[in-house]
Length: 204
Image (cartoon, rainbow, N blue to C red; front, side, top):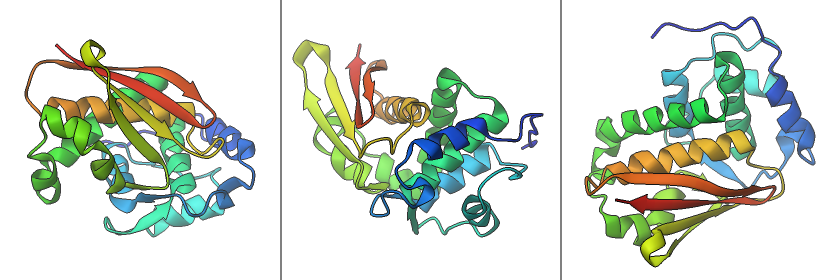
């Protein structure tokens, strides 16, 4: 894949994200994300430069985690925002980016079994269990809404998940819903705030 270098390498959204957190990169250490998520998104859109990023994030890029390792959710989010800064992705483009990343993950041999048995029922009943394989601390609940489909709520401590990354979650859920191969799923982020977001999934 051809790397991309933007003329804008100061990562303004990364700086803004970290400045809003109570302790910057040291915030919320008990909240973690699976290393595999970071590896897959960097494979899809590499960070060809880390100039301007905090040393802690540059070290993660220089010594990437194993797929099975857990990394701080703050670092994971910050590097996602860095990708968006470097590749000049807005919320919609970042959602599409994670839709594509999740498609690649679903086709990877190690995850083929995990995602191979997705059904409309597991989208509801096992959503939290699937989520827990990749996130620790950030919570997900799935609630049936009858004709209004499924309402997913994701919660986190104040400021942990930036709005950009919350839009990426929508791309993830949409791609996973498509794996059920029943109907045409659509998902909308219907609410976003400092401590959580809500998504409505419908299958037509």
